[in-house]
Length: 282
View 1 (cartoon, rainbow, N blue to C red):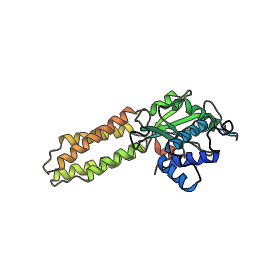
View 2: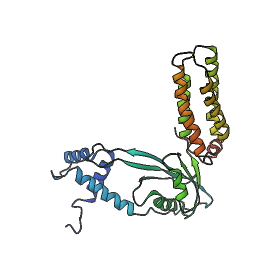
View 3: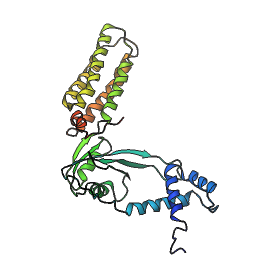
View 4: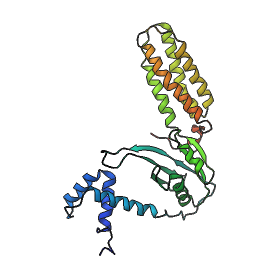
């Protein structure tokens, strides 16, 4: 029967093993299956992991169905890419790996979601064109690629076989600004000059988010440089306030460098959001 059932297991059992191993550790998946199904006692986590990997390879080999409904070739599609690290629990188990995932969507069209392991062959630059063509029905769609400015994700848009618009992900900008707000609001000041400096810092940082959201990164950088000047010229008398300013200086410099390194990728996020072309993260 190995000619007809090469895995020595039914397709239903393999699908269940793949689903459970994606939701819990393989050892726990093996224990769960042995508890509820009449499987052999020799079934272990290694068998389940190998079957799940082979099932994934077969799924990967299947090309996604091409869009068959009518659509406008001028439709702008948005591809959002984000990454994370999946860490192995033990050194004897599989090592950590980078995961890239995100949605491909357009207004009025069915969205698709992808998930790839980074640095695996074929790489993401080779896989994304087939996903784009299957969803859009075109080998050169109008595409906007949204990614953060770290880990070389912006270079993915440049490696695609067709032109695309690269946009810096909005989520990472207010996240960095929020950290600055927390530092300034936690400053302990006593003298009038220190209180006035903190009010200026709070006012400047609160308006940073507005400038980034409305596509004014140059003004935001100038305001950030003003914050750095205040951090370095302010005379501190209150114990602990100097540490707060030093703590503020480093992330402020990192934010300036982050925005300058991604010049050309920041847009008017507010206008794009009002057109329902940009999905903000909650």
